[in-house]
Image (cartoon, rainbow, N blue to C red; front, side, top):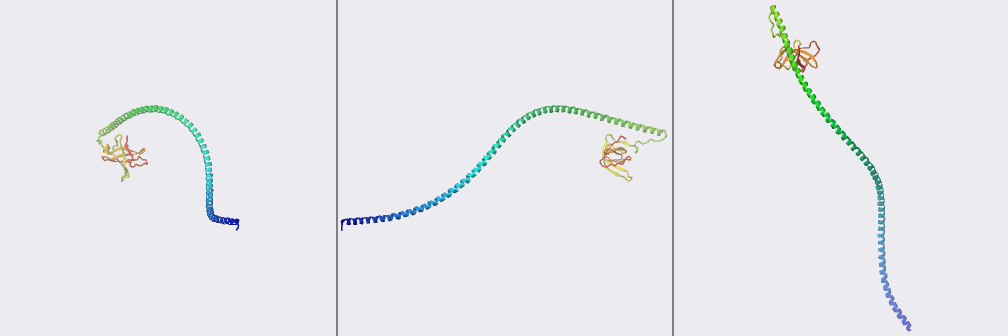
Length: 284
């Protein structure tokens, strides 16, 4: 065999050995590369899924942000409107404050004027009170004088009544004495001074009340009163019964210590006497 041929055979053998090594290495590397490629594809799939989730989450966040922005824009618009209203209210309040300040100044002026008026009224009231006090003192003095005069007049009237009573009694005694003298001259007898037919006068200032009214068997009206011999009442005393004016006369027929009963004389008047009517002395 030719040397070249041998060389080529050797070279071919060497190349075959190298090629087999290369084939083995390639086969190993190809499997590793395929495993890495599959892993890379899996990682890519997972990454794409994550990217899709992130994109969806980003879209949701973006939508929420847009909604929040719209809400904030609306709130901002409301706040702007509210600010305008507050500014307008502030201006109105400032104007109202100026008006109140003016009114306060006017009220202070009025208060000052009122204080002066009150001071003047107080002075006038004090003066009036002094004048009223003087008038009351004068009136009190006049009333005291009037009371003294009334007491003096009452005293004089009492004395006059006593004098009239004394005079009347003296006149009655004089008449009785003359009648008795005439009867004695004509041969008659003297009349007893205690005759039941003689009408007597009640004490001055006598007052009593009717306590009962009844009729006797003869139809005569009898009235009882809350006064008796302790009040200087005697039989045949004549009294007046009044109620808003004169009603009738009462002639005492029976007298006890604190009670008396008398005959009512209506003097032909169509009136009636009842319990509680006033009974007072008469001048005969």
